[in-house]
Image 1: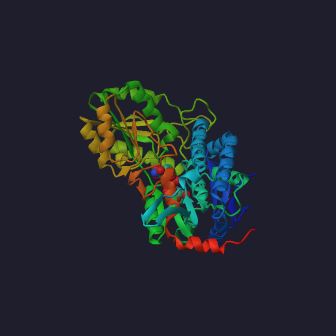
Image 2: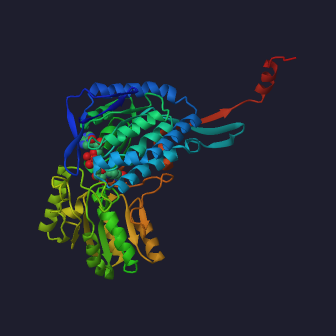
Length: 497
Ligand code: NAD
């Protein structure tokens, strides 16, 4: 029996009534493991209406009680960590350790949401004028929505709904249709944590469901994570409809390798950060810029990449899993072909790689190009596969220019032993998240996830203090009480003797 993916609408787990059926497949062999009956327009509207009703009472729940739901949730997520990682690994193909990491990064955000009382504190100034005080409160917006990608089906939904809900909002989640079972389990556990019915809703589907949310008058804010084109569409349509929108989009992350860096550290880090998770990370290092003599390390890097073997999620020796779908595989293979045709040198070609017994899976072996230039498709496009593009620069200044000319600005790293080079890089680089001898500098949840340029459309970023600003309004109150009111109050007081 195929598993039927459930929506969670108005406090009930239900099968959708939409005509469209979407197959959820195991990327290791493309066999169907579940099916989604997508939500109808009316079902998505019911979810929003139910979230609107729930908002009226949820916003009145004291902040410490809301935090207690988050404490329960964090506890449940930890207790179900392995179970969640198993579901996630089966539908994404990620290795079990990588799947555990995906869940763990989400748990850390739920943990952060436990601090909501402190995070929501406003500001006060006494005596802004004689006897006048000004203070501010942060108040929730109403119904918020989240639209999430396939590549982190636990972490990214958890970037969004725990903080939005802890702030006092209600939330409609529309996760990726390619791996919906992990988000479904996250939602079941949220209900078990004591969240009242209606506070969180889950609808599955594709553009049809997204468009209802984008155009719905009762949705106040939209959080999106996904590809560039869709991110631009979501940002434009959402803001056109006068909603608050944060849209995290695609990336092309560079690392700069100085000749004074620790060679072994560079090679180990680059292997994991480029082809780990089959390169399907928005913070993957997909371009390596070797400065000066550092280019001599390329053969050793190639040898290290060649040792990485993709495999099944429960194979302890697997370096990473398959890419998510046949369409994703076809796209990556076509970019590899374009790289060859456009004159890059393909030192390592994973196009033909397969896993014995799983030949129908979406496998791509580690792939490495040198002599890559900024005009090539493999440089300009986000490949989102296990492909590393190598370039050379004569100086740190030239490397910085290459990175700053990229339209994207999600993450970058520099490997060096020089504090001065690292300081120059962190100061001049036009990228929102910078690693110094750290390959994937994703900030922990007490900071925010701060992609720049074409990797982010909006103002306030995910988690940290910025997410609380995104999911709240500030109300500023200026108050004056008159001395004469003290004696009036005394007269008005009942005589207790
Ligand atoms: P995607 O854009 O295809 O899908 C993301 C979401 O949008 C899904 O829920 C999908 O159903 C919906 N969607 C797809 N097409 C749509 C359309 N035409 N109209 C409305 N909604 C639509 O992205 P993906 O392939 O699932 O995820 C991979 C992408 O996400 C990569 O580009 C990656 O860089 C990016 N990403 C970015 C970050 C970040 O923080 N910047 C993090 C993770 C992933």
